[in-house]
Amino acid sequence: MNRKKIVVFTGAGVSADSGIATFRDSDGLWANYRIEEVCTPEALKHNRAKVVEFYNLRRKESLTKRPNAGHLAIASMEEWADVEVITQNVDNLHEQAGSSRVLHLHGELMKLRSERNPDLIYPIEGWEQRLDATAEDGAPLRPHIVFFGESVPMFDPACKVVAEADILIVVGTSLAVYPAASLVYYVRDRQVPIYLVDPGNPDTAMMRNPLTHIKERGAVGVPQLVEQLRNELAK
Ligand code: OAD
Image 1 (cartoon, helix red, strand yellow):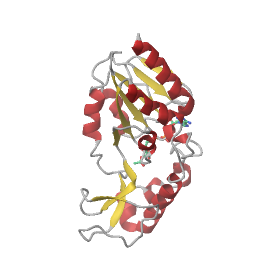
Image 2 (image 1 turned 90 degrees about the horizontal axis):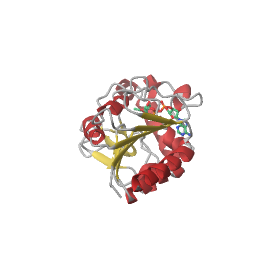
Image 3 (image 1 turned 90 degrees about the vertical axis):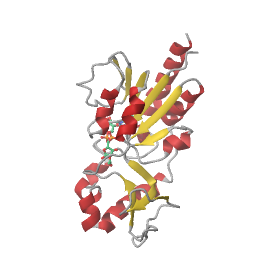
Image 4 (image 1 turned 180 degrees about the vertical axis):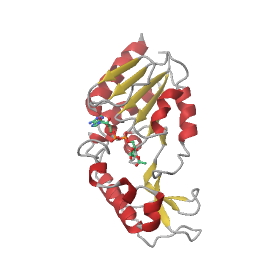
């Protein structure tokens, strides 16, 4: 089999079938919380308790969640393709499913970091970040999450990964948040096929590559697509 490089770019939708709420759907997190109050550097500065509580709740919830058939199908491609996952998600369901190369663009729920030194990153046991917890430099710990208004340090490495793709698969993202959404434009050339699995209508207006939109939820559409690609690439 011709071993292709397949890059999978995922958003909240890939974890929706595991029971984790998306952000912008009608029942999404941003319908119940104001971004400015829980996901900005200003919120962390002025209302730390609320920010920490928000991510404690997300963490507590995520501990009960398991990968779904979409995550598992993505991981299974490693048997016959060179696969890298770039996710906007802060859960670890791709890792739990067995994906070995996962780049987290927006941080990770199960890690905390120093408010002063972004390189001092620690795994957290359990769900609760205590408000008075500090890093070894003495600074308070904060969730290891990229807040709105902060730079996205993993963006450049992610662009390089996308540029290597022979095939790009996009799953469950509204493509509404930048710079993450612009990753789809970093494919090597106009020939690289893009497959989109999403029951909704992400913003694909500017995409010029061959685009196949599989309008299914992730747990259904991703296994279907993976089977299709496996058969096509085996020829
Ligand atoms: P959104 O909530 O913006 O988009 C979720 C996408 O998932 C939509 O396109 C839905 O149609 C789709 N979807 C819903 N149910 C699905 C299912 N069962 N299977 C597959 N797809 C489904 O989430 P993101 O695009 O991931 O950032 O949001 C991007 C960023 O905005 C997040 O990383 C987060 C958020 O604010 C930060 O918190 C920094």
